[in-house]
Image (spheres, each protein chain N blue to C red):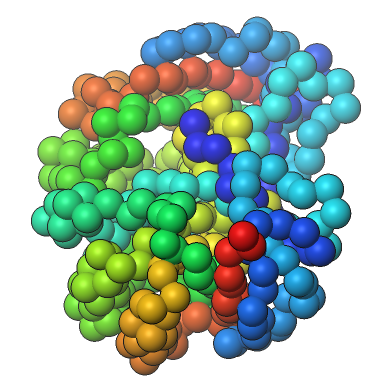
Length: 180
Length: 180
């Protein structure tokens, strides 16, 4: 059974918030630090939690590419990170599976674009849509070295320009630096 | 955001338990009644909860068939029901999307078989896999008239004989009668 992954925003935690902004919709209350763990930090102002889950759109051939370059979290040089919580619209969730796949990959090349950055950007997709009361559908997490931050910006710019992103109605970004 | 659907097993509730058994794996503690609602009954011995969520395998053409015969819950004549919680194996969840779809529909005709019974058997799929600590992946709920119970048995027998069901490792069945 999936373990919870809890992000705690507040005065303490292992990541310092360098920048925090709303890309679409409402901002999260500003915080100085973020913690990523299995439980809530006691002094947290807010928490976001979810679980790692099964693949939703990835085909077997694409999975083989992803499996060949597994995302390793906590690499010593990966001292920058980003937390990007996202909610998609009712129109997105009302589509059938093949219609969502068509937008995500045939039109937007989401999996292909992501695959180009696997070697430098580690990522983890945390699902929370199926938890009652969740404010977001996903909490996307990325870790990378400071020198690769321009490549991460490039990845984000490509994804945000896709047809898929027209279905994103709430998106918040926290850019983070590891506390040493 | 999805509302929770809570099943409470215990001494009270709107459905009397006629039969209760484990098809695969561990039994749930026996109860006299079951309640289906938005919250937990105070005297419940156990609860199972989840949310209605988006389609996972259904294609647009199949969705049009389903949408043409919507599942209406609470029909006056539908005084029989079944709750069938299910957990699939790690092998199932480890497959890519197209591999799971191949087993579910190309090999097992799950959606096509279910479509044949839409007019007499109302159903609701409650997802709980993405909730931390959930014991089941899905809570499947069915309502039908007493005269259609043989057709429901036929539906279950067909599904349980499929390739998909080889991935079911925990399955419990409660057969229910509406308390009047």
